[in-house]
Length: 272
Picture 1 (cartoon, rainbow, N blue to C red):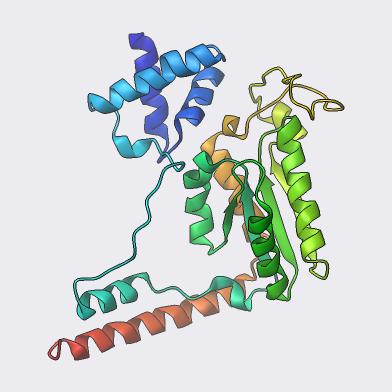
Picture 2 (cartoon, rainbow, N blue to C red; picture 1 turned 45 degrees about the vertical axis):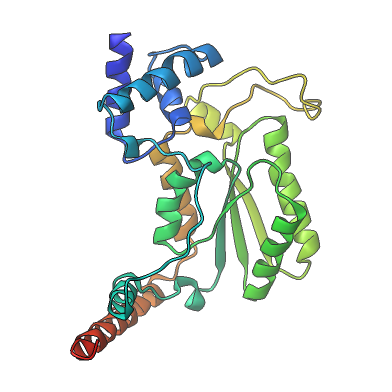
């Protein structure tokens, strides 16, 4: 058990942040534990909880995006609000870009991993949490239609009977709800090619899944893809649609406007 603890600590140290499930798949890939639910829940989950409690692993290194809170943004005063605005001000990257991009993700637990990439590029991260509701899809379709430019949607999800049906369902309904949109939809993880290329651990396909008829091969969870690889795939998808000349000009304007805000705050200092 001590050897497993050491291996888990080494895995967690390699990444900025990952989920418990991703840590489990890394351990499976390195031969540390067997790929069973007993090893996942009884060994990895338990040990990672113990290691956070005893300080071996910092709590922030393992993310949980399935639980969150709502709270309005508030400030202690006008000066603090202006300083926060100056520090966080960003221009909308895609206003002057020739295309519109969204990243779609089946699993809420992985949102924290891809968020670091989508946040950087000002790209919506659309989390379906399994099959999305009609209301969610309708809002997405309206946003896509309003862009008035080609829209590229990249999807990350499990490769199992239900997993591959979710992106089919998403694409079909968005096309129906935004029939005039120039829509391009692509599954970029998990794909059949990635299973072999990345040596992803598989599991037997559940025959109890009503959609298993016609599904070929074993199943693979998107969590099995290394977090850095997931982020790289995501980053590559977004970058291919960026006009970098326009992007750098926008950044120059953004910096100048941030300086203007700083001057405004400095001039108002004596009046606040």
